[in-house]
Image (cartoon, rainbow, N blue to C red; front, side):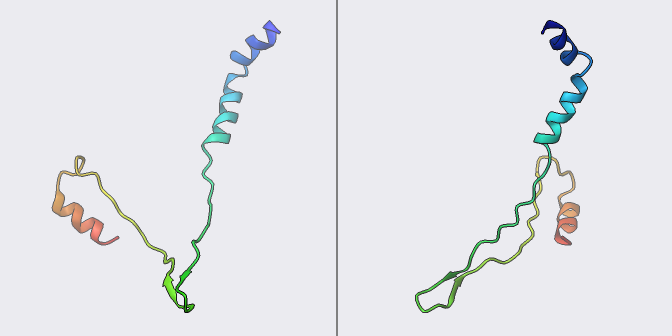
Length: 74
């Protein structure tokens, strides 16, 4: 048991690290659209529409005007 433990911690360590990262760091796409909400007459009250979102960290931006022009194109 001691020899197996030594093997796992030294020789086989990189293999187990890669296996663990493969299980943890893989992005998973979950396409789940929200359903439409209807009013009592059956008309659409609220529905889902695809949208893009853009953000910026003001503490990192040096030229605010250039950043605003760049982000406006998105």
